[in-house]
Length: 124
Image 1: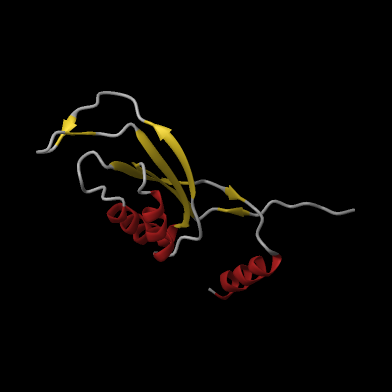
Image 2 (image 1 turned 90 degrees about the vertical axis):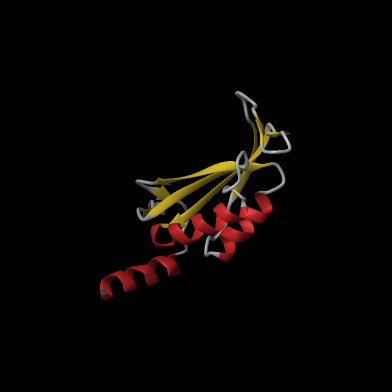
């Protein structure tokens, strides 16, 4: 009989980034360049007070792209910073980003990767 096991990772964080429609690809490319392994994008619609921003009185778009990136804790600062600047989040009305430390993450991990991680952990 085949026994199934759960491999749980505990040193992982989730970066959630909400940007203006059309910027997700740029933000994801920045995350990948900083060491992230992949990302998930979904579309959302913002609600609330829509104030006019800036000198040109530009309206904040209601359509958003939400990006989820799982990263190892030792990579969070680099990936977070790259995503922030790629999404132009230092500009009013462009979006927001936050980091959530995860207690557990479970997914399929190939046996050879688990073996390498176990060897690395036992040598320290």
